[in-house]
Image (cartoon, rainbow, N blue to C red; front, side, top):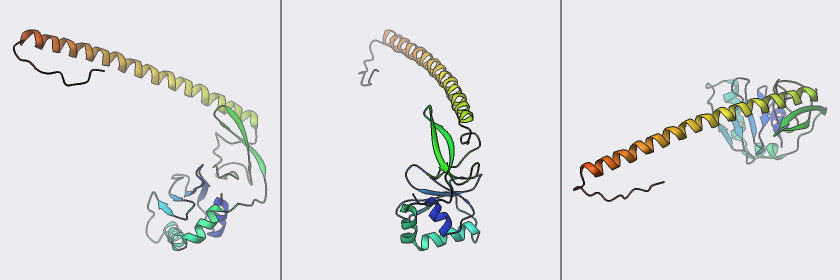
Length: 184
């Protein structure tokens, strides 16, 4: 993945990182995904910058040479340093490498080192992972509660509808209507 090669080649001062698909992403702290470059060198602009701005000029330069851009994106990056940095994923501590620690720096594999997800202190990362998992559990229980409430409301609506159908059938037996609607 060549996110660093793209950054160095075009001397990009913006935030440059990568995603799991191997695409290079250019953005800012406020809009981290403003431009996406795929491995074929195709440039997708998610948020159009002002005309004649530095970012607009950069986009024009990259679009003018898709072959060079594709080669850069697909090439291997080289790094001056390989410092250990930790993060977490699906309940596991993950060790990565980076040239410099902390936000807005990026790991060798292209991840932005956010202040609450990446640290050189593995114990701190484990604390974050546990807090995140506990918060997710709380959110999932709340979500299940909302779904249970919706299910109770749906059951009440179905019962009310069944009573309505029975009332209509009892009140107007002479009017026959074929039930063509699926009953779940």
